[in-house]
Image (tube, rainbow, N blue to C red):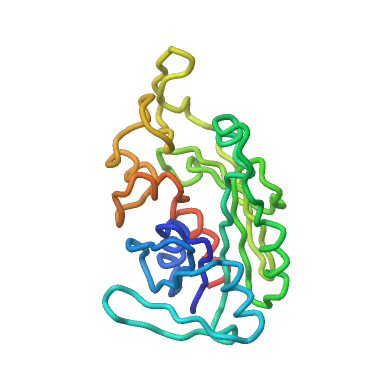
Length: 228
């Protein structure tokens, strides 16, 4: 079974589907040399439009393997539009900047898919909260709440487990210890790359920016069990 992973980044979501038994194929406008699967570099909106209109996309990897896929070859679609327009963190640190909200256009394209579709984004985004996942549900070292808007399949929503403490780091000049890491930015006691990898369940890339932008694979592995 093949799942398209659009706006894929380094593949946090894609790896989760892979662990659930899917063949994941990524789409991103930027090169993603660490992506754990076949990859198509290009604009996600344009790529999804190509599929909806009956065209094919070529996915390949650095080992020379490639495959052409059309809508009839796909068993699911996951999308993670850029979160900067919705993120409370970005809103607080980048005042004055404007970010394009690609959620509405992406949602419209997904409505034309008949296979299971999943759209993921941060707290504060304009997504239906069909499922809200948290690192504590999976025993991870991050909280990292994410919303999921789900269509064309049935699923169970896990209970939100009480957090065990604080996120480690500095807050307004005071240091707090806790069982969770803040996987974003630099400094402030946020942890090393190695600590981030363990906290997120990510071991195929050591790119700090890529890890910061990813979701834990455990989230989509859980979702993938319902569509596999």
